[in-house]
Length: 174
Figure (cartoon, helix red, strand yellow):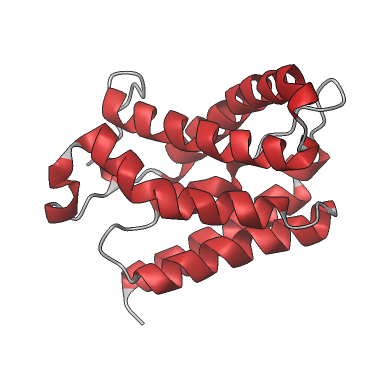
């Protein structure tokens, strides 16, 4: 097993355990929960097998669904994010992302806001995931303001959690 596969498996397990044991227990104001498990989908290497990527994204969401009793909403949102990821990458990094074997972690600078491509990519991915997740949760047009409010507030907390995790796992430059 090569180091890329090992790091993907370790990232999958670590983010899943962190989501289940830590972030599912954070309940700000009764409805704001960060969902940093989607970092697995965001950080997955661009040159790996897409079928494996779609399956692991689906099962990642499904396992979170099992622990949150959410009936498949996380699985659907994760899978849709996985399918939308090439378009988000193309929008954020340009068409050449496919030829550069893009590594998101290496593109992060010390100040995340200076690497606007990375911050934009993570932000767009989180917003898409959360709009789908909360749209499926409420599933009525009457609740559009509730969907938007939860999307905005949960996106902020998820982005903060993702940035914190990225700085914790980013290898230091020597």
